[in-house]
Image (cartoon, rainbow over all chains, first blue to last red; front, top):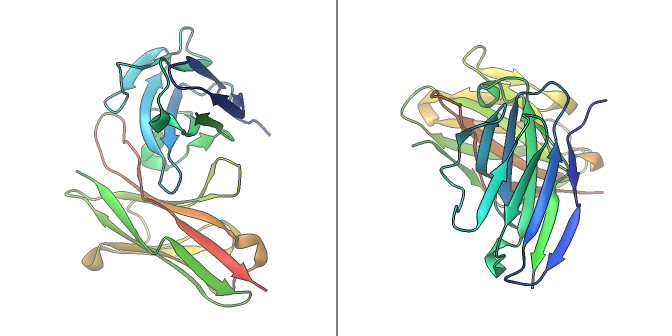
Length: 117
Length: 114
C-alpha cells in the first residue's frame, strides 16, 4: 500500500540550531501539505503546495520557517533558528487533488517529532 | 471563519459500551465535516466524512456520525467499544475557497477499559 514517507521520525536539537524535515508523498499526488501538531492540540496547516507552487502559507512563520517542493514531488520543511516553542509533531500529507480538503482524502505520514532543548 | 469545538479532551468507556465523541462546528456557509483517528505515533486516518449528501454517515470500524444543522453538531458514535478503538479522534471542517483548507479540533483521547 502506498504511503507518505517522512524523515527523520524523531529529532532533538538545541535552540538556535537549524533543522530540516523531508516528505515524499504518494506517487502521483499533486497536492502536498505540512501540518504542525503541538501536544494536546489538533494539526494546524503550515503550508500547502499544488505541484511546485505554494497555494497557502498564511500560517507559516516566514521569519524562521521555509518550505520548498522544487520538482513538484518531495518536499523539505526547514526551521532556522529553532526555538523552544517549535517542539511539536510535523505531519506531511498528500492528496490527489487540490480539493483534498473537500473530500477529506488526505493521506498522512507518520510525522517527525521535534524536541527543541 | 470556520472552526470546530470538541467537547471533552478525554473520554473513557468500558469495552462494549457506547462511544460518543462530541463535535460542534462554526461556519457561515455549508461545511464539509470529517472525523479522523490517530493511533499512537502514527499519522491521521480518515474515519468518515459529511459532504452534503446523507446526514447520517457511516465510516470504518463501525463508527458513524450524524450531521445536525440545527445544532451545528457532528457527533461521532459507535454502539460497542472495542479495545482497539483506543486512540485520539479529531473532528475537522472545511469550506469552499481556493483550497478547501481543513481546520481541526483539539482532539479527544478515547480510552477503552477492559
